[in-house]
Image (tube, rainbow, N blue to C red):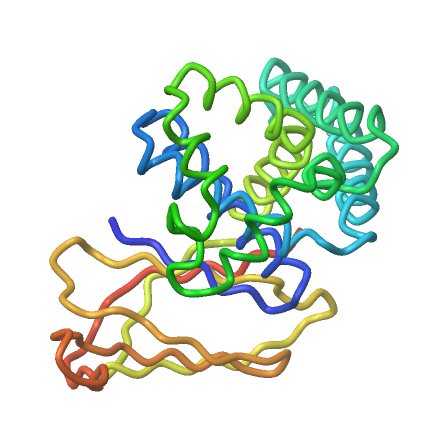
Length: 252
């Protein structure tokens, strides 16, 4: 079932971007071919751009502590599975401890690597890391998968606590809220928002046989969803059919 997340603020937007990029890095690292490792390294450098905010680590730690406090208040609640609750608390502790263990800024290991930074600079140029532009990079790709896997392990290890923290926070966020079945009449849907605790993200799920995709515009007052079709030869066109879908407003 296709699923779409739409963040309502920059904080959640950053977490979703890092989640997406990290998944692509890990997939390409495990694929082991030098072309996959090329994609993995360039994507890893994109993560560095996204997390290059000193307050991201603090944001993650504060949110983990807040969620830990919320979950602890559920201990002893007969409606909550004790084992699952304890596992969630342990995951939060592990991620928070990992972030606190390294006092440096997120990604500092990568920033301190002059060779990686030289590749990052060239990567901003289309085709800028060809072998004649950066022969040392071409040489590294040819060293074999064992050497490249060793290097990726070293580069990624300091970032794993950040990834684990983001996974936990987004899992809690996606699991919040109540899912409702709604219909976009003639491909369009609008809903007014209110309440003391505004939504931070919405999640849309459609059936596998729906041949269109949603585009969302939203603010703290309302959300507007428009379903479009795609044929890859022109701009997306508005879908004129009634589209049933599931909508969840999520909030930490």
